[in-house]
Amino acid sequence: MITIKEVHSPKDLKTFVKFPFQLYKDCDKWVPPIIKQELDTFNKKKNPIFNDAEATFFLAYKNNEVVGRVAAIINWLEVNQQKQKKMRFGWFDVIDDVEVTKALLSKVHEIGKANDLDYVEGPVGFSNLDKVGLLTEGYEFVGSMITWYNYPYYVDHFRELGYTDEKLYSESHFPFSNVKPEFFLKAQELIKKRYQLRPLKFTKTEEVMPHVDKMFDLFNKSYASLSSFVAITDIQKEYFKKKFISFVNPEYIKFVVDKDDNLIAFAIVMPSFARALQKTNGKLFPFGFRHILHAKKHSKDVLFYLIGVLPEYQNKGVTAIIFNEYYDEFTKKGIQNCARTPELEDNLAIHQIWKHFKPEVFKRRKTVKKDIS
Image (tube, rainbow, N blue to C red; front, side, top):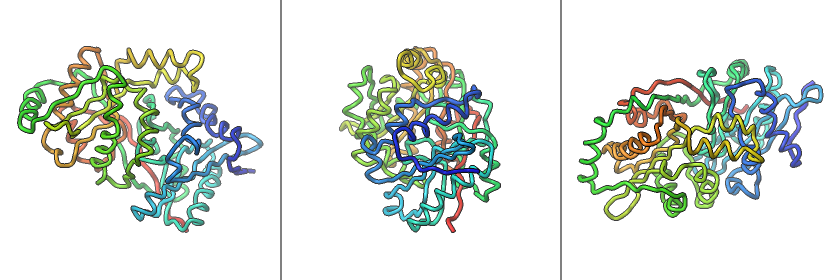
């Protein structure tokens, strides 16, 4: 018999966060989150997303053992401002039993129906800076800090339960040796002169912080046209500053400004923390920090996390300036491999940016959708 229990106590929330550690304990491709960070993400007093969203967490039990989990999410900015009557679900993990999946998702549908929403979509997080998508190809590759991993049977469960594909994403990678400076070296000099632009370089995190609010503003503008984009609010900016920026080497954050010092483009690259996080096994203490710091300083693999260009500067080759800055930095550090985060397959503009580096798609993922009846 399957029992679904709503999470209320801190103890149950910790069980919710730690369930994947049990499910994937024998999987060397899964990258664990930091337990404290996950708990903070779900803490309504710490995460400002709860000013505009709500979430209900469920655990599935069978024979008194936890066998699944799901977060049922409503982003009210999306529902009320964008008129997207969508019920979200995320942080979905389950054993290979479609009845458990069905029981968990029925709770998501119940909440959607009670709130007069039209359809359910997932797996997604609260916002566009959260993890997204069900892995459909690339199970043989190690995951990353900013993606969910799942077993192949998840896809079968959703298909069997009548969910259809909604958004398709791809992840690609390329060796740094594919990056040839002739593709951007001359171009970036011309573009800097033509538009009176210059890059900003950082060596300390505190140098970055005064610019981060403007970066999020630019992020909102540059991604606004993408499907289901929900803007980051002012209060969320402070939260994401603390959550993300400390993990990023300051020299891996690149800004481009105009003659009046207005930000017109930015990029964030992260070292690969995958192996370090596997070693920490969710805990920063007593030794987890050591693994994280080592990866931050010495990882030869990097992940292109975000690139944003002001709409009026898109298609003007501004990314050549950014790539030139990274080329110098990566050459000094001996970077070997570059990867990209999940990108919508229909976002043709972003795919064009990378074409000279001959990227290879190595993972695909998707969100799935079903009407609420």
